[in-house]
Image (cartoon, rainbow, N blue to C red; front, side, top):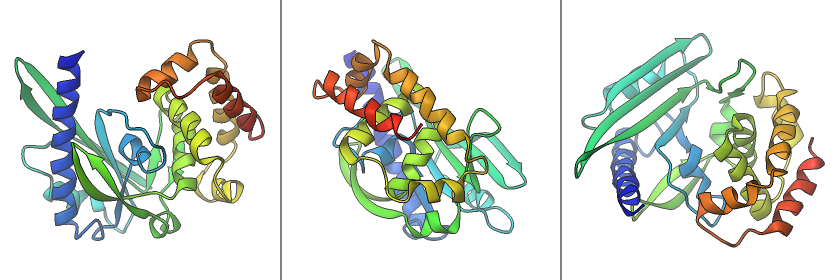
Amino acid sequence: MPKAIDMMRKREEEILEAIKHLSEKTKNFSKPEMMVIGGYALRAFIPFSRFTRDCDFVVKKRNGWNIDFLKEILPDCFSIEHEEKRGSYAFMRCIKFLRHEKSRVKVSIDFMEGEIRGREERDAVIIDRKMIERREFVELTIGGEKVGIPVPCYTDYFIMKVVSCRASDIRDVAAMILERGIPDSLDERIKEVLPHPEIFSVKINRIISEIRRRTFLDSWRGIFGTKRYGEKDRENVLKILKGLG
């Protein structure tokens, strides 16, 4: 376990340097206007941090592609592992390998333009002008250092997490509900950013099913390294979620 933690810290230190590099090259994430989502953005909404394998950026679609500009300003030694452009959205994954003792550590940065896409066709969130305008600049600790980054507003971030609905997202949603509650203007915003708004209720029901599992509480505590969450917290989250399903 100590070796694994050292590797995760090494990865996070590299992500920190990448964030600082991109901030400088984009004039503090303004040209183009970008923001961080995923596990790093979560730190803006709950009092716990968890290690994450990659750093996710989103940017609004423009005529042409912001992705093409971002290719030109990648941090040193990052290469493009995967790229796709399909009409309304683009995706680019960039990677770098680090040496840590006898191991090789992979660091990933993902860029999403226009839409955030999941595994299923209906799992899409539109990156609209309103999302960019409502982003918030926060100071977070990454790699042991304070750094300013833009993150989505709580309502937009909550929708992203629900639609993604991976195992880690479900634990994140539970923590967010417990710490922050249900976001404001949720129904209105769902209609604005989800091409298939009905998917939200489907995902909520999936989240409820997972939180009902006996193993959920241990995995919830484990991912954040805390004993703070208990059975009563799990029941409170379920009660709130049932009102959304």
